Image 1 (cartoon, rainbow, N blue to C red):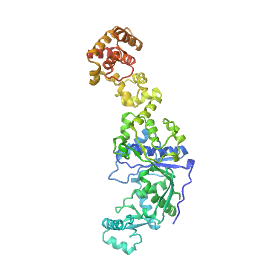
Image 2: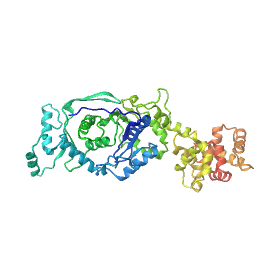
Image 3: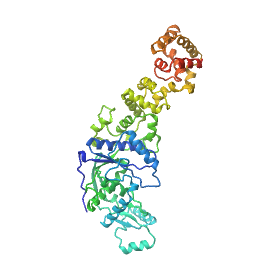
Length: 489
């Protein structure tokens, strides 16, 4: 039996990967794993592989696959090899690699690293219960490890379909986790495990290390929930070295901390706050969301939270990832996204806003209006909502709650005075609008600015929260501004 030969890959020889299953909606935990793997590869100048683990036909969907590709592109996590872009080690969807897995499984059997096991589910459960009752580990007991050809033939004559099990070497397994340091699994906790089901379907236990070996993966960064599979994969790599699969080296492993949600429970892909597509719909920037996800276990410096992807790549060291669970804080995520919104060049901000505004809007007007909301928005959807009054046309409506607060009897008095003051203007500029309203409402009526301009703001923009009033009215134009004041009067 072989011993573990760990990869010594550095620099451009580093190969990291991201290999999700296309089930359900892409989620933030998945994105954090992809980000760390991508940043690790980019930091070292190595390669990043994006493949898809889709051997479970009952759960995998084409729609989910397409969403995964779309989300990776939206996030800007480019890959050097994998689905859609190809490469020397394809195909990159496991559903298209079944012949490869069948060949590897047979080679493992031929070399004595795997065997056919014919136990029924009832027999397995009976032996597990007996082991538990006697205080022994309840994993597979190796009963069918050394069946003779005659015994195999007898089982098959009964109509039994065998699974294929990997034959674990009977020893402890120790490895240096890139995030958690030295970890040891006792031999008693790692029994022989199934790599191919009785129906011939290969399992993750076979497909994942096979693909990593054949694709030259040198560093595996993944969630803490897969930590217990590491000794099994170490043994598989020893077997691969003997039968000539891959480089003969075992990748280094790093297990990332859980992301916790509300109630201090692990954030599930079913939790609403986990849905990546919802963040895009709300107007999060990919760079803002990735900045926050990076902070779930890693930091660029003790006194710094805001950084670009380029800065993260330059500084990223996997050994600095904190192994403790990280809590997802939506408020902080929004605040960090707001910092990235304000970092955008104005023309870029205006362009990104278009996705959240009605189709066919005047792009020149958007460009003029965008600076009024860029400093006031954490999300693109917030900015678009504040500018919606400019593009509402005949669909414009005043928020009823805001109208009840600001367009009561005193508020309508203010609106009437504003209408009279504005109606006599010969030029419609920010300065002229501000001068007319200050004279009529602040100086002549003696109102404080909040009480003076609040009713006008609600009448013209439809809401109490809007971009600066005078600039907004200039952009809206004389005709529409006066028409909206007339409407509330």
